[in-house]
Length: 286
Image (cartoon, rainbow, N blue to C red; front, side, top):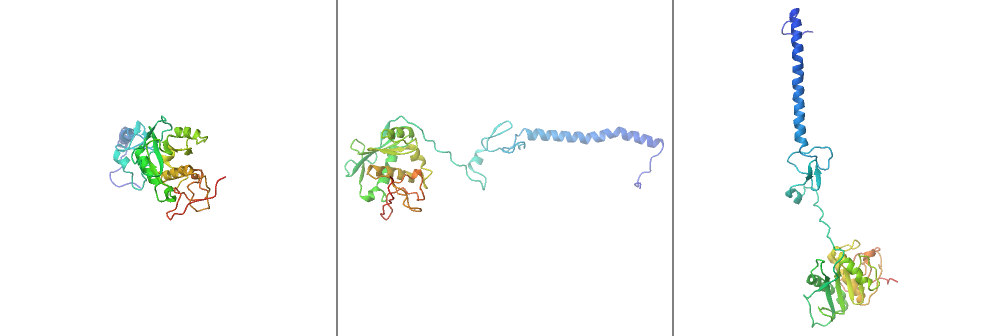
């Protein structure tokens, strides 16, 4: 069926009409094809210069947007603006804080804490020392140790009185030391602590800096609470107490239990006495 409109072209006019169409056909086809190629080329230049989307290989980035910190685009490192780093997107957890760095070794020299010293008070004299270069303030550490020793749940509940000194009158010396230095102190008493453990050798308690700062993965509580366990456990040895085992599943672990080696069903506990004055005990370790 023929469309209505102009009459059909016949004869010489038809041949001329077909010749014109042949001359015009390449232009009509090449113009849109060329336009399409130019469009694709501009898109490639715009998208390619932005770099790849971080975390999605092969997907080009978008100009004006940055990737996640630490990842690289096509033309170098990509970092988020400060506001994006400080304020995570809704629904995303904040980045975990960087792990605390604990020096493995130190000079082997110590600074004696002087704040809190009481030379006239009656009681068992102890001295606090901190290895130089550990980043621990001796007076701040001594304040924490004093609070632990004199806590109502501590050894003072059993009638032991402590007083801090800064001279050689101390019969107990508590030293916070780097892992290597703590190992050397413990080795003098025949103990192998492997850069991880605390110990008591005669009148010296060696507190491993790693345990003081980081706590223990076996202890259900913050490092500050684990410090109480360190002091109470090692001072307990100084007072003559030996190791104890777990008294039963679900019960508080005795402070003289080596909780860093596992709780064996007991609950983490940093104190020798309960708030009501009950002594946390367990079967002696052979």
